Length: 317
Ligand code: DTR
Ligand code: ZN
Ligand code: ZN
Image (tube, rainbow, N blue to C red):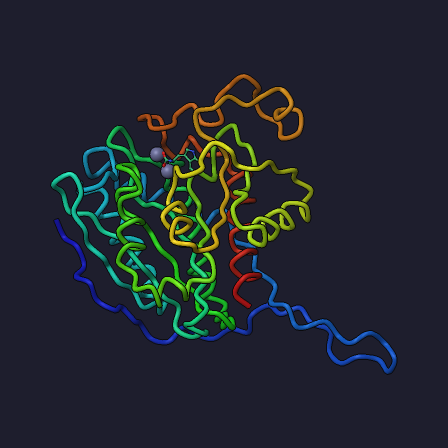
């Protein structure tokens, strides 16, 4: 089983491309002062996010049908993500741990620059259950976080705060990788994390649009995005403590995130505002072998990936 050794992979410096910046140049005498320059988050092409999902599907097919902790499919998934990040100029670190007698791995990617006393993190678990490829759970979050990171590099974004992206191992065994990461942070490094954004299941086939209601500022950032595109949201109530934001929250880090639903059934009221099928689970293939690339709602994936980018840009500038 090939795993890239824990190295800091740094390719040639990313070609700096002027980030899309929205600002009012100068101000007319007597007018209100010009607003601060606000870096506008770019749109993440959903085709790019789906291309990563296709890779995850192929990886599962070539490795026993899954991408689960301790299996070849997980290692191959990590190598795929790491290879893209190394080529884009990220500093990557592979953190290993043991769970259930098998070795697991977290992948951490730091974007060089920014104030390392103010670290904005975005993360997702990369492992699937053993029963399938885990494309919605959680290839969707992993692919969107990857595409956001690659977009930071492609646009040469240089925010005030430091950006760190993470792909967790063994979430399905009980948030093992993310808890290992948080527990092994010094208190000083834990205090440096100004926020952790979690993305676990963001492309459900019968989607809802749920926003975590943990940190008010992060919650507002996500709600502002969805309000801006005219999509109503609800507070996420199914998952308190059920995904990788939980260890960060327990350590006092402000957290937030997005979710499109798992095995709970969509109500008639929810179907009236979001479309889809009432009385049917948000994801009928949750933890099943049918969680493949055909188990994704492209509109939900697109909207949540763009909301992810919006929040990363807004919270790091
Ligand atoms: N624990 C996740 C699925 C999950 C269930 N409820 C929530 C709420 C928020 C995020 C994720 C979830 C898993 O099976 O990976
Ligand atoms: Zn799961
Ligand atoms: Zn999950």
